[in-house]
Length: 141
Image (cartoon, rainbow, N blue to C red; front, side):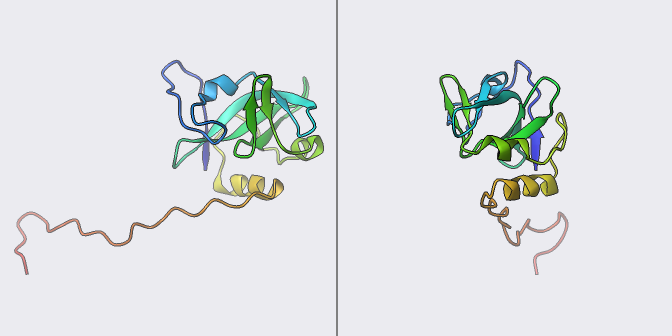
């Protein structure tokens, strides 16, 4: 599950999969390029992983009257002139359309992983049974 970033001044820089010191706000408005260096659009929003807070997806506005295409930040690279996404323009523009400004559901995120042929992240680990001690007033057995 991912949550999109609402750009406010108190947003702190977070570690990321693009660069460890990237502030998600710095991605907004940057030009996005495909693997061949062709401009595909402009980064519109950044989505953070719910569990880790790490930037995971970006929504790229692909044209004036077009839609936003979700792109993974993990294999992408932030260079001086913009975000470089290591996929063909056609694949990016054919990404599932979920609209922007909303939370990505686990199913939507799974569709994106499959679309880009990315390995699924490991499931959250179960900490196992926990002993919280005894309730107040109970005798030890």
